[in-house]
Length: 216
Image (cartoon, rainbow, N blue to C red):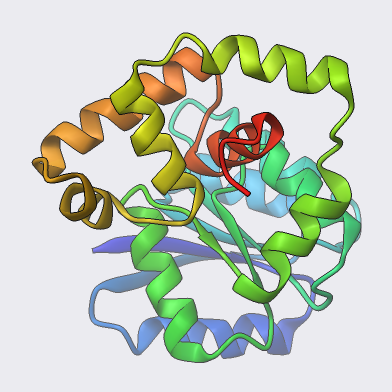
């Protein structure tokens, strides 16, 4: 059972998301919060596997909330939510440790799929916004790219293959099929990639791959 928390200052949005998540027998909504401060309290009091966090909220916005949630002793995975697919804060939330983002008008089935994917360790980026956000807000200045390349150079050729597919949004199962290896082997490669690149999740690894030109 995936234990979830909904964080949004709009009560109707919280109600709608709760109804949707509760319709999935594999998902349990164990907490709700109207802002980031309440979210930290709830995540401290309950074990949360995945938190759906709005970007724009009073008292503590979604970016700060994501940073605080990821710093907890037992951090939940985070999916950020936004109304705007070019919201400049979304990239910052991903950089803060979110495992993905969705637009609030995303198809309900895709929201449920995202919760399952993120809980399983994959990333979920809204396809229509991901490329534009990365292109626009992920700076391609030379010092940053040089530092990213130095970390990438520490990977083995096989790990670079795994990273390239990961950066395209492939799941562990997809990568295993494409590279003809066991899924457990893929998981081991991904774990070492995150450690070597000094990032906390697959989204940040994908952004670093983007920095170095490993993926178009």
